[in-house]
Length: 310
Figure 1: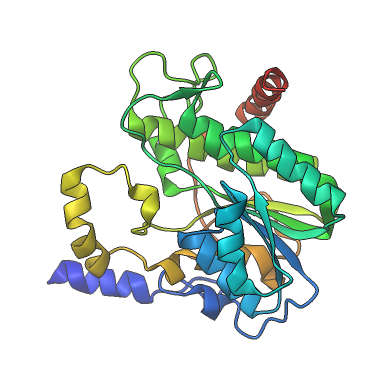
Figure 2: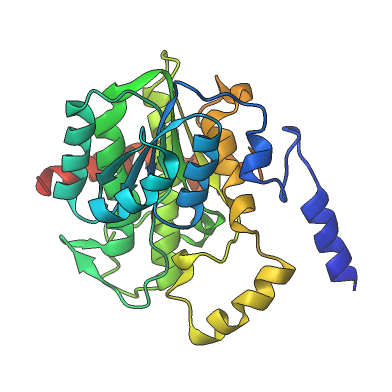
């Protein structure tokens, strides 16, 4: 009983922003007029991406919806009005990401928000694509190509929002295995996922430093633990108990989308950059995520990988 009471207290708690664990995407954007704003969201076709697009479109934003295929993106975008623009962006395929960048540029689309929401999680077996571990390739390298390619398309106060995770604390000792990014030894699904999410956080903070002197911002978010198809590689036992866990402790999708929507568009964050958010408030992250030297080394190594993937 005490555990249930403690959980209820946590769910009801709100931070300095006025929002908290149980806040929803609609709540954190209530009263905002996003008319004239354009938001690109990866992973538009399901889960948090779909909910974020729905809510931001409801507030007046034009959605550029990215999914693995144009058909999936188009199907999702139909719900967001004729102004919505579907684009294909398979993050594990550099050619697809670069084609997405080119399409956005060719169409002259200026972006107020680049919400990097898509990702894959805890692959049970080590999977190598283009010489890279697939979670690192998809979650970090694909988004790195996308964001760096579209920086010039950001408006004067454009925001980059990286979906990281509290799982960044699962990263291996040292944070990022720069000498063995693909886990050629001792592959662990959770450690590999944690490394990719730490990379997302380090990238956001490194980008924020590189944007210093402009009004553009870059931040990272932890959405919370949500029962979405991101967890499709969970063990059968974990999958069986997920509905019970969801009822007791997991966030709903509207709650899970709240933090990324808050960081994407809330006016109180106009000049906030280089931070990590959870439950719609600035949160503490691991010591590795605050290591600027590690972030710079990761940036350099990522650029080298991207160059080889040309």
